[in-house]
Image (tube, rainbow, N blue to C red; front, side, top):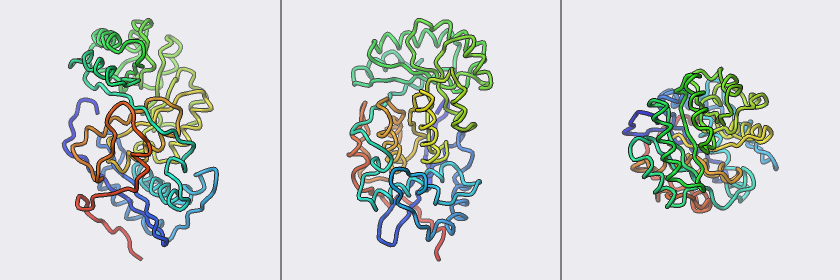
Length: 345
């Protein structure tokens, strides 16, 4: 998160159970400053939706998740984070019913997932941190930009690029900080600097086509994915990647729609976290495991001082073993939860 410190992360865990005893968990953790709804609003909507969900029969269709996820009724006002939690719980129920792993329900999973390292303040020893990440074996590093003069940030990126060497991919994230003129200046000054993409360079995203006309800067969409539909990729020649954050995007089904559209458009998709608990990160790892082998933005778990899972997820280092994160039954420390019975028949 750019320029802010969060002392405490709060969310709503959703637990679905079947008559046969299968259990599914999901994490609704709206991110302050980014999510459209607050946690109290999410809880209130969950109370309203519980009667709709209770007694629902989830079809076990083979080959596609869409019918199963569509069965779970969500009104238009349902917050994105709650959709993600509810759909995550459904996917876990389907996995339990089929006797399969959660990643296998989502697609054809890989055994490992690579993570990109994150440098949020490159001005604070950014090149030295980049060198450490290279030595640790990270294949990609993302650097936050857009908080200082463009010329100074370019020099920092050059120093970081030198520290990374040729084998590590460099990504940048401007968080919509630049004017068109600043973005053009950045693109022209970094023509010789290998950068995989810059996330959301423009303060006015409607100028993206102008940026594409004036430069060849590779652009990744992040915030834009919450403002337009996946069909927008059909006419987005300047877009190289989409960063998909299911907690903010609106659930598993919406994420899969974007991923499918990206594949058809020849655009990379990168699953990323929004500081979820281990419950939410399990599903993000499962989603990432069924994508092409590109480093993903799930290096947020080490920012949490504690978690609701016992034991915590083994997610330190440049890559993670999918089975060790998602394969074991979920074990929530209920002493760290406040139970909310939103509905009883």
